[in-house]
Image (cartoon, rainbow, N blue to C red):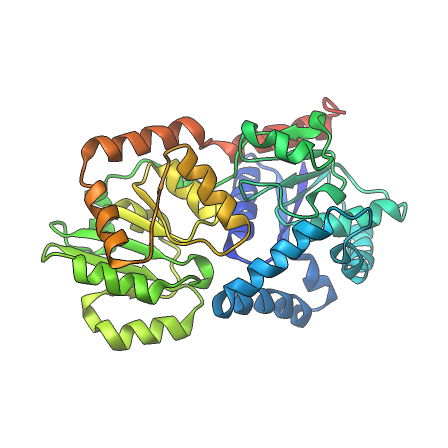
Length: 372
C-alpha cells in the first residue's frame, strides 16, 4: 500500500503528526511520501507561507488570536472561506502531481491540504480515499468545509464539536493525535540524563515554546530561575526563535541550558522533573503519552486556548499564571506526590498513546473498502 501524507510547516505539530504516521506506515512495509503541498508551487512559496505564520505567532500572538476569532465569525456565514479559494493554484499543481504518482490513500494533518483536495473533488478529479487528522483539541475554523472519507479527532467527547459544525458523525473516528515512537518507548529518568550528559543529582525543569519558541518565555524563565535551588536547573528549548536564544544566552550564560532545536525531545522530557510547554495539541499529547508532570504556559489565543482548557478540565496539566506568585504556587503544588501521580493517571486514561497504529489500521480498512 502507498500513502501520501500532506502537511505544512505552520507550527511543528502538523509535521510531527505526519512524521508519526509515516513512521508507522514504513514499519508496516508500506510506501509513504510526506509532502508540503505548497512546494509544488515552488519552495519559495512554501517557505513564505510557513515563515509568515511563524513570525506572526512569535512577534504578535494577539494578531494570530484576532485572525482565529475572525475565522470563528466567518464560519457562521453560508459561504466558502477565503482559505478555500486561496488554494486554487496549489490544487492545480496537486492535480498534476497525482497524475504522475499513484497512491492508495491520502492523509492530511493540516487544514490547508484538506482545502486543496476538496477543491480537486469539486473539479471532478478522481482521488483516492482521504483522511484528515486533527492536531488540536477542538474543531478549528473551516474544518467543516473540507470533504474527507474519515476525520480522526483527539477524543470522543470532542465529537459533538465536530458534528455541530457539519462533519458527518459516521465519518468521525476518535483515535487520538499520533506521536512518534520515541515518545511511546519507556525511558527511565536516570538513563535519559546519562544519555544527554546531564548531572544525575540535579532536578531539571524543561521549558519549551514549541518549534517556534513562541510565548513569553523570557519572563517565565526569569521567574523560574529566581525560584530554583542549588540542585535545580532550567533547560530551555528556543526552537526557531534565534532572537530569544541570543537574549537568554547573553543574560544567563551557562546557568541555564539553552537549545535551539533538538531531535531528542523525548529524552529531555523524560530527564526533567516538570515540563513547561506552550499548549500545542501535539506537544501536549507527546507529554501526556510519556506520563509527564505537565505545566501549560499561557496559550496563544485560538486553538491553544481550547487545548489547555481540555487538559486542565481532565486534570492532565496545570495552567501557569505568568507572575512570580503564580509560578511559585505552581511549583509548590507539584511537590505533592499525590498531585503528580494523579495528573499522570489522568493522562494515561484520557490520551491515546497508540494513535499512529490505530490510524494506520483505519487506512487499511478504507483502502480495502471495508469502510464506506
